[in-house]
Image 1 (cartoon, chains in turn purple, yellow):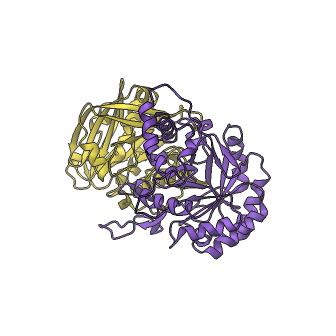
Image 2 (cartoon, chains in turn cyan, yellow; image 1 turned 120 degrees about the vertical axis):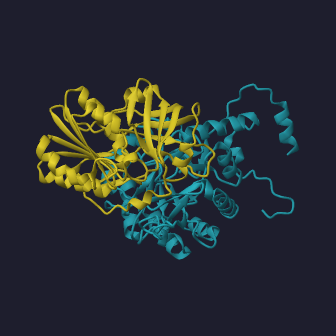
Image 3 (cartoon, chains in turn cyan, green; image 1 turned 30 degrees about the horizontal axis):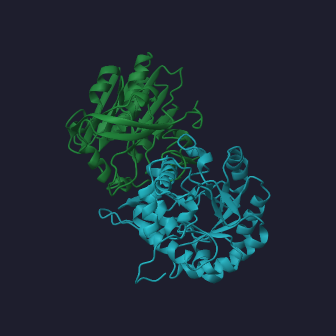
Length: 325
Length: 275
């Protein structure tokens, strides 16, 4: 602390280039700021607002083997400082995704991480194999944590055994860097994370949404057509931060942190808690340029404190004297 | 017919509130100074408005543009929840940002000579600009305007100033005919022989109008409302079922050809407390 304070005092406003690159296992990203799956389409939808080349990566919406129609509406409900969604992984299927979304993304100068969804282990494997044949895919993010589909999704993410089974099968099917996206709807997320590490995952990302619901007090009906959905937004940030901190302190693989990140300061918190990179989700809906503002803010945060590399923030949390770490 | 949604570049515009007045209980009119949107917006398009910062509600709210006057755009809104309540309290001089203009417009074909516009309640909002533009292009315009009560007949003066015929309907009979606006559609289809119908209002009303137009063999455009998060086509919250699959109200709509819509029972109560 003392040393850092001296550095801050010594800073005189001379501009310093901050090294924004981060390593996420085998991936080198030019920025720690990536997009959260399902909130950014395939990037094209935000191209008017965001310089995609400044993102660490575009993490696409979830892609399954066949087209999935998604859930009936209403699919969202606004809640205090957040929102519930039950989109249900609507997507056109992996072939249509490759033909349109991926083909467009391939022309953009940004790493593409494809979020992989499935109803069964075999479907996850098939999608992963198909995507592995595409040179424009930088990594896969295994979605075993979507709370909004009946089969697959969350069912694979809430027990170590099921999560390990699907991760093992996909690991064997792809040479691409493999990120496993974890659900917060479990008793001990670090236990699942450790199981993923043991199965050869290159990184874990967390948290997916927290299961929640909302009821209309006039009709007495749930606001979401599917009754329950996933809570996101600033409301979940403290929970997400705690889970990222728990996982980062118990696994050796990199952690991509997310959950209610709205500002550069939020991103800093996740990195201090142990995240190598951070994903921005619901904030994109509030401000379509949120990823750019957070990137700029992270850079100036580091510059103002004379921190040469943004990666220096990762895990740099200062333990409470009486607390555990 | 429908412009490529990817072709039009959208961006944020910081807009100053010029005027914000209550039209009747729970319905307001807000005027923004928004030169870029005012220049670009086509009838039927909407803006995705960030009403407040640092509030407990975080999502934007979509509002169709009712009318444009120079650099000013007019939005008619109903107070339905925390967002629109905050909007109703916005004072002149306040600045808000909006994404837009977004979505397909009414995009009425050029060869139309007589258009029938059918509006229920706040559904009149996106039809204001359209009535003006059609009328300015020499298209004869008939309007069927319905509301629960006379005070809530949104855009009445505007429609009366540009339309050849305006039929007013109120549920309580305070103004015009007593009953739903759908009750006068059949007669207008026969009397005015429109070559297009444009409808907006509660989903059940809009559906009935579309079915009547279809039965009469008249092409019909309908503007649909959905809860919406991103507004740019990414989040898939606002989907509408169509014959060619799930479409996004934000960029594939909000205006659709009625024959393409696969009607579902949308519970209007989903907007209560969510506006």
